[in-house]
Length: 82
Figure 1 (tube, rainbow, N blue to C red):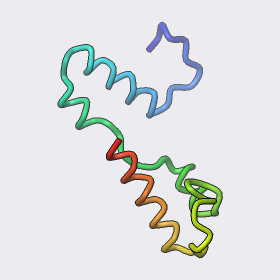
Figure 2 (cartoon, helix red, strand yellow):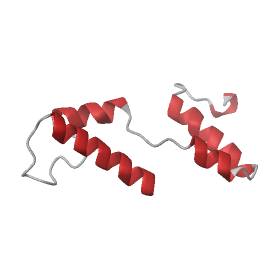
Figure 3 (cartoon, rainbow, N blue to C red):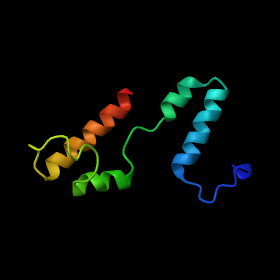
Figure 4 (cartoon, rainbow, N blue to C red):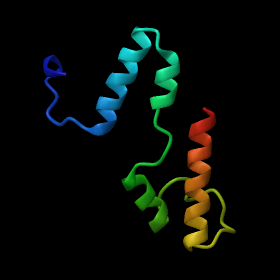
């Protein structure tokens, strides 16, 4: 990490570096276990305020807690199956 001269070391960057090392050492099972499936807090916030994931996809959905929950669940499901 030191030789990369990164100004800001974030959790996702550390996770990706770790995943690359695991793949290089042929530990694909551990890499699959450690892969993140989820939504960053900022993305979840955008979904909550109506500007995030698939905000223009379905005009029939009302802006409420159930819609936010559905969109977050849909996003996580799509990430998991990719």
